[in-house]
Image (tube, rainbow over all chains, first blue to last red):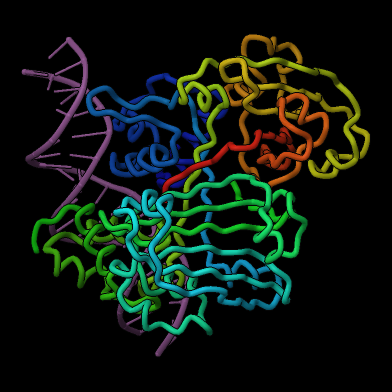
Length: 230
Length: 230
DNA sequence: AAGTGGTCTAGACCACACC
DNA sequence: GTGTGGTCTAGACCACTTC
């Protein structure tokens, strides 16, 4: 082989890993050897190897060389869309209703989760998202107004809090959790489902550096399925 | 600024995007201009820009230039671990029980999902995964034996099907779905939970090129939470 | 046609980990 | 020390897209 591009080299090396020409844990040739084999510069194979390492297929260590990852972990990347886009992608008309907007002392559970002092006042927003006027998701959100200046003045009628925050707040870190729960009476009523139905719950907590920004819980009615590609 | 590394440049550009110094949709300076600003070679800023584009923060097009992504979609990356690792990470002892291993015509629903002719024989594997001898997850799997030679001879007692496939089969594509469901009687009995409890269901379908490899459904008892970082 | 990003090169130096 | 990967450079050519 000669004059290969880094992408072709990437694919060829991936093939060797997948067909176990190079077994998990095995040391593969160094960059110089591969560059010679493929008839290209070291930087070119280097790019292919870096990409494979990013993808979790290789472990690279200076001096120790490059090894095939022992557990070639596949990673699924989940896009976290705005709910409007999520709904409109299905062809439905999006609408939302702001059920509550109060500045109130947060429950201890919420303030603890956000790492704030107990009893501190946060903005509490409860929103029902609708697809073709049927409940799509129920959102219960607490916002640290210190971290999001301007939200007090924002009109959240046209634009939902979800959407407003995506375009006006930023965060550096966050955690995301999924779980199955039984719908409580309030959630069931809002989502127009039977109490005790299985709901899909997504909770997200975001930080701007050390400052907590928002904690949100999204409840989806039965049948909702979150899908991604591997 | 001068003599910056590509990673420092990456972080600085990310900062500008996040604080909206460069608004979503805006055209940012070209590689040459940025290279001059940072006092480095074009390839160095190029690497930073490529990384930002990979992360979904930028849209790059030849001739048209580089723009801040209009919806700076955050992507959560979910690692798909072997269940053994998932259990052992919690400090528990992992064990598994193979409940069924039969080669049998697949139900239409399964064969359709895998894109196979109705009534074709597949390997059906049902496994209960245990953490400290308590049910951790129930796995219902169909394997296309044509795509995974050797599985017929594999002893799946020591190593679970889950683990065996990770290290012996490979796939090029796959889909992953999550949802909440109510536990059926059989699942409830196996997981030792009440029928009608909310279970977290993960289903995965993998392909090796055009050939379907395996379709698996994993059922987790109430309280199971899948977590990832943003 | 011209300007942008995408890639490649040949060489260099550095950082780290193992000997 | 020594060899590996990690990064940077200066230059070059190509591919694509808009003009």
